[in-house]
Image (cartoon, rainbow over all chains, first blue to last red; front, side, top):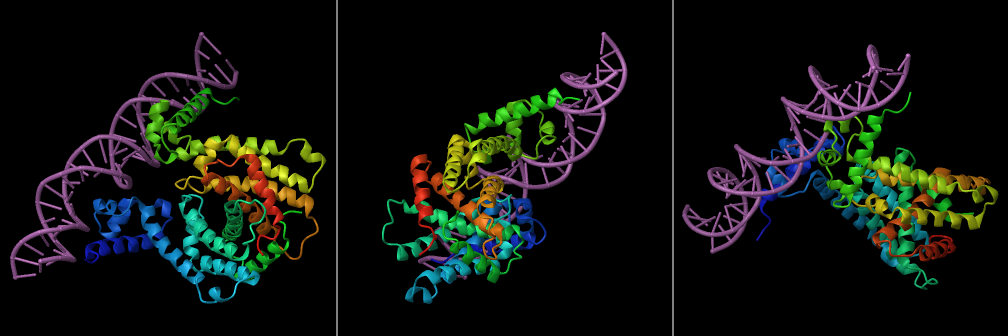
Amino acid sequence: MKQDLRIIKTQDSLRHALLTLLKTKPLELITVAELCRLAKVNRGTFYSHYKDVHGVFKHYLEVIVEDFRQSYEEPYHKTNFHIQNIEADMIRIFHHVKKYQDFYQIIFDERIPMMYFYLLFDTVRSFMKETLDEIELQSESNIQVDYLISYQTNAILGILIEWHRQGYKTSIQELNQQLITILSINSPFR
Amino acid sequence: MKQDLRIIKTQDSLRHALLTLLKTKPLELITVAELCRLAKVNRGTFYSHYKDVHGVFKHYLEVIVEDFRQSYEEPYHKTNFHIQNIEADMIRIFHHVKKYQDFYQIIFDERIPMMYFYLLFDTVRSFMKETLDEIELQSESNIQVDYLISYQTNAILGILIEWHRQGYKTSIQELNQQLITILSINSPFR
DNA sequence: AAAAATATTGAACATGTGTATATTAACTAT
DNA sequence: ATAGTTAATATACACATGTTCAATATTTTT
């Protein structure tokens, strides 16, 4: 049994229409009705596929995040690991965000629901967890690792927020230099 | 010239109605129409005060954040400052969030727009900036301070996100212990 | 190629959104 | 207490939302 052609056609049509509309207005102003008119899809049909406009956008984002995941699983990763790799990992994140800048501009918009931020958070967090598991097996004192990982993950996302707010004008090289400096200040304070 | 009584009455009525409705359903499901019915306010009147339901909620949040700001400006702060203070500052944040847990549960909800998160981010960030200005005047290498501050600010918010996800079951003492441990690991990596 | 399965459509319905306007009511300043 | 000011109301309109259902069209299976 194969995937029904009509379903594919409907979804493609809606996703294509969304991309078109995004060129003219922000995501929050795009209505289901408008999307359906442009996609030539019955509104009732829309609701049998997605809950709202965000549903369509999320569909895209999942593809993007998948691309992110794969870029993270490249060969070198298996062979050697340690400190200099963390740097490489972070650069990977910067490259990813830059590559899909158009999307991340939307994701970091203040009108957009937290769900997309959390999707990014969870993805980066899972990478961070892997890295930590590899490196820091000596169970450090009585720490709850979840707090440590979320702390470090969101710290990185803080850089992305700052990058976003400055209109992505900082180059990736510069951004990376900043990160190295920040990490070298070791303790976040003093 | 004093503030018109009718305006105060309308806004109080709407805010009160919002609190009532929040006990029965999530913010995202509360409609302007419903709010106005309960508050006995004409819908047209609503729109001359607020843009949408979020406008009313934001009104509350601004009071909350103001309370936060003030708790941060308490006397001891002026007299002595240094490393052990950072710890005290962070505990302050934890206490604040715990105090208004009902609100932060909403703010961190994935359906809610980023704006509230950013409001918190900006507030914590301004505290962080003060702390840094006091302590770290020796302009460290060629760092762009904005990235450093956003990094550190969001790291703290990462702990709050984790706290939220675990249903605020971690006690403040425990949370503080975690933070100290995390900070003592100095470099976030290695 | 025909039959069976299922996705899409069109239409309707109750409710919400955002805006506009004339009328009424409440408040402020004198 | 009154006049002048301004906020709230009632009503209406065009459009959006989310759901339902019978009729139709398309796709898959046999």
